[in-house]
Each structure stands twice: as C-alpha cells, then as structure tokens.
Length: 143
Image 1 (cartoon, one colour):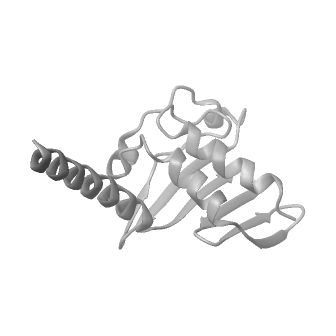
Image 2 (image 1 turned 180 degrees about the vertical axis):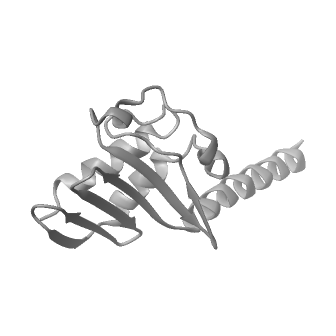
C-alpha cells in the first residue's frame, strides 16, 4: 500500500509538472483591435507588455511585468484549447457594420502561432474571454 501511494504521488506530480512546463512554452499572447482609422496592439511576453496605438494619436509603451502577472495570464489560459482557437465562433457581428472594432487574439506556443477568427472588441468568444480580460487589465496600467 505504501508503494502504491508513493507511485500515485509520483505520477500526480509528473502530470502537474508537465502541465506547467507546457504553459511555460508560451512565448507571447497578443490582442489586436482595428477599425478603419486606428489600431491597438497589446503584446504580453513572460517579462514585458507592449502597447502600440496607431491612428489619430500614435503611441508605443513597453513595461516590465512581474512573474505573478505572467502567471495570471497563464492561469487565464488554463481552460483554453490553444490549438483550436481558430475555430471559435463569435456571437455578434457589430464590427461588420462599424458598431464595434474588430479584434483578434493570437498565442505563440513553441514554434506555432494560433490565431482566432475576427470578433467584436468587447465581445470575445466565451472560451477566450478570461484571457482577453487579463490582457486588458495589464494594459490599463501601461503608459
């Protein structure tokens, strides 16, 4: 029984460590919004966040983020099947009639970049909404 328990703990720890290592391979997460006259690009990397705005007023800011902040971004991705984000469907199409900006979320993991289809800014698909909100919270304090 003792050996069974130790084996079980070893397997459990291996699975948990493997999951965390898998998340660590994420190189960046990017949220982009665009309309006819402006674009916003928010890139979050393990140690920094960059916010670029172009349009009537152009600006670019980069700030360091803490390990805790990066882990919050990773935690927001826990329930996301990254390889399938390109197949997520949107619930509204306000951007098609200029009622909302268009938005795209991309995640670079290992050597692959996974990109969602376009959706309305402020109305992300349910599966990626917590991640979009985490990115926007980080970007609020950049400048």
